[in-house]
Image 1 (cartoon, rainbow, N blue to C red):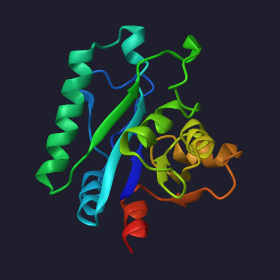
Image 2: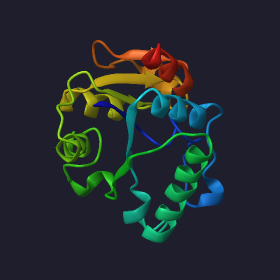
Image 3: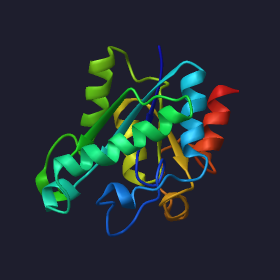
Length: 177
């Protein structure tokens, strides 16, 4: 089975320092939904792994998060793509959980659920914590320069061997070439 793990905010949809708090605020990055469709059509299982501390902070509730993800699923489906699962961490940074990236808990849960090792599995993100979680879980870190990606690259410290692409569309093109 071919698997790819995607961060959500800054990779699939536009990010905001004020958080994405409603379906109306969830706006796809140009080309990202088509990229997911391309991955699906090339035989990849596409899984989203996203920190969503807005839940614990009270910025939105579970029904709103589900509505945002429903909008994302429908938009991808309309283009012939599929997101097989969405994993999320609802905890704030100081909660000390094992699932919040940069910790690998969410990715390890994905590996367990899909019954496969993460070695070589691309985990695409725009922040250092996405790359650190990928590396810690044994996955292949891939940085996109959308969202926080350019700042992440400029700050340095990305794990050795991290692939870098302009956006999700470019990463998908490389993965399906």
